[in-house]
Amino acid sequence: MKIIERLYDGSMTLLTDLYQLTMAYSYWKSGKAGQQAVFNLFFRKNPFHGGFTVACGLEYAVDFLNNFRFSEDDLSYLATVKNQRGKPMFENDFLDYLQDLSFTCDVDAMSEGTVVFPHEPMIRVKGPIIQAQLVETPLLNIINFQSLIATKAARVNLAAQGDPVIEFGLRRAHGIDGALSASRAAYIGGCSTTSNVLAGKLFGIPVGGTHAHSWVMSFDSEPEAFKAYAHAMPDNCIFLVDTYDTLKGVEHAIEVGKSLREQGKKMIGIRIDSGDLAYFSIKAREMLDREGFEDTAIVASNDLDEHIISSLKTGQNAAINVWGVGTKLVTAFDQPALGAVYKMSAIESRQGEWDYKLKLSEQAIKVNNPGIQQVRRYYEHDKALADMIYDIHHLPGEKMRIIDPMDATRRKKLDTRSLTFKDLLEPIFRNGEMVYELPDIREIRQGVKDELGLFHTGVKRFVNPHSYPVGLEESLYDLKTNLILKLRNTENGH
Image (cartoon, rainbow, N blue to C red):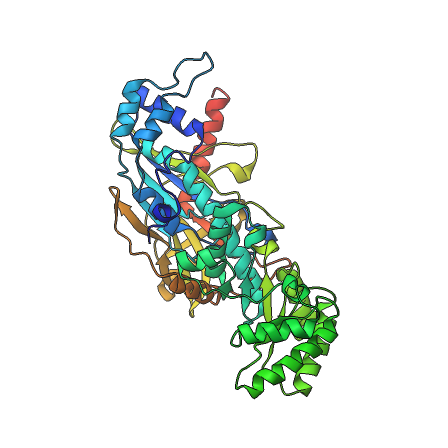
């Protein structure tokens, strides 16, 4: 699916920060534009104080890269950009260079739906430094948001314990694109349907919905409103019962449900959108069951998230079996950004060899890992055991240790002779040509569910989750340490 082309008419190549273009100009001016470099996209902390993250957004990223080129309109605009002295920021020869520029990098990435952890590269870009630099901002924009929402959706669906979750956050989402990409990511994370009809059309997500309070208020009485809705939509009857009095609303829904039953139709459910959801759902269940509506669903909404759903299900014994989640899902209400970054980890020397690079910082968490990295996930008895970040030029042996990049005392020995493994970064582009077959969105969604099933329950809990073992292969850890010491000594004049 060509998402970018379907959503936007025209080039999206200028969806970037100005400093990417000023660096690109400076690379070109310095004769470095073609120098080969490697960049990694990764994040430093799991969101929502959780124990995992779900990779999402690759299809958008692939489509963006497939369409990466500067249009005449883009270049005309760049010709108008001025520097601090009021002069053109970019000379015409550079704009001519951009006009002929096409994407020729190698890209490796984790497939959408992969469960990923801090410091693991989700995307690796290798190629001419000017190109690898120019795609930084759009890749971060795409992957940051969609991975955040897919992770939130996965957490909500874990809390629901198999109950269907309806995503209906369109009206509260952050703009049009925020709503569309959130609906897509929420479905990948496990939601069963969306209220977003355009997302249904674009992505093939099942759509669902009932009626609002305004429908009931437009009639002289609630029973009249329910009867009219049943007449208009006899095969889509989920009645919103809390416009005036929730339990009276349940009674009115039951009466209309009986009429539907006489016609050979079915009342699918009722929805409660306010008040004490546990109390009202329990009372509603009793009322429905007493009248023979045991299979009528009770849908709950009202600013739900994984913590409220978990409390309602396990702590309050609520009789809710479908969950409508909107604002707190599509806005990632309790953490509005994933914080993924894009850092250079290697650059080609004049001799044609790779020089490994890292960024120093006073904060250890901001010191990135060097090398041309791959992530290998080890499994024992069909369960995920540990992840190793290694350099592709130093393949792991049969016996090794992984070392936590943030805590050298956290080490884990791995005897791989009895383990199976999978390398998580897959080839997506080679020399700018796409070599990857994009999976269907339903396949990705099922993959998230299957992936989460491979991890210990403790990794998925919401409070004080277990820290899944992720570490650098020992020789890569040593290389990183030596690079840090070398750079520190150079800074200090030694």
